[in-house]
Image (tube, rainbow, N blue to C red):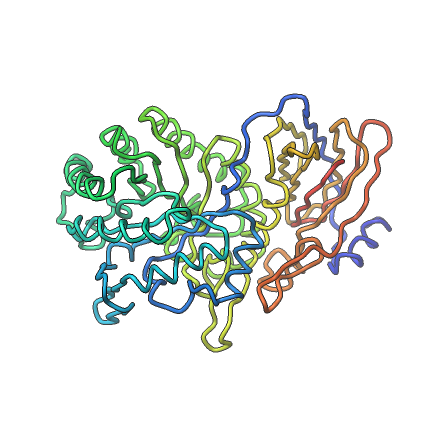
Length: 468
């Protein structure tokens, strides 16, 4: 290992092995800016019954700060629990632990929309479809619009109708042709009560039956935003040789990313054909709550930096990483009842890195390397060029030769003690504080010679390069 890498290890608090150094040639074309990354691209998705717990209140400064660190964003209320949440206008928030049914009312939404105002986030507000009470959903939407219209992105009608039979919400044989008239009837009631309301859906789970494509085509003119869900790997897979098995190796494979963005391309095209925008409203590394040792490790952050940009480059409105607020899961943030506070997990730091790099217009980027390294770039309105580099190779250091037409800037690193680490993660030398606040502490100055800048990436790390 070179003296340079030893110095870098000491600087970053890493223990680098004598890993092989692999070159990477990266070219960014700043003369061809493309799509603009939406300001609210980043998002978190929560199970709707989280509303009955004391999280989304304006006085919860820690959770407010954790959201504000990420800039403007979109908070989604959804998940399977959206179909088990009932609206009773005058009722306090409550949860029947025996049945799983939650009840929310006006005071619950008062707290939620005051919280959203404090965070400066918008809400993709899920409403019940499976309960067959569209009048109640219409009333809930009407109150949300009354108190927090400026914080509403849209109302999402139902959650994963293509899995209703799995959850005993519909009888066996329930299919998209059965779903469509049911959804259309509910939408008619909701719109009648709320003229001009923006609706989203069908919020389908990932399957190969083209339910999403058929649903958005069948609901053309009735939904403004098409939404669907994606998990990179299957929490239900028990076959270690399967490409869907939840392992560190599978999560970082380029073929896994290629498969996932193919689904995004298909759904985005179908939504556009139906006159809708498209948002990946629920996603994460491993389905069914994630896999301990994969979803809660630094590897999930390495996956997410590449995934976020890969979806943004295709023209989606945004991504909502699902969060059940439980430790040991895929959640970017969890709540520890024993410690009485919030805990920040590796995925959250990937979101911080994207917030720094994902500003402005996307730039064409090419990369040549034998290592598993990715690069994505944007051109900001301030003229600064941002490049997010991720070394997903856990055994090889990468020496990136970056050609951008600029030769001076700084580097903010996304680092962890090991790829499997669950704690000790930092971005720009800083971790989120117990008060939920985060601020960059360190940035390395870099100056190139000739046409290139050289940026070193230790195995299993990422960096945001900002060029003036």
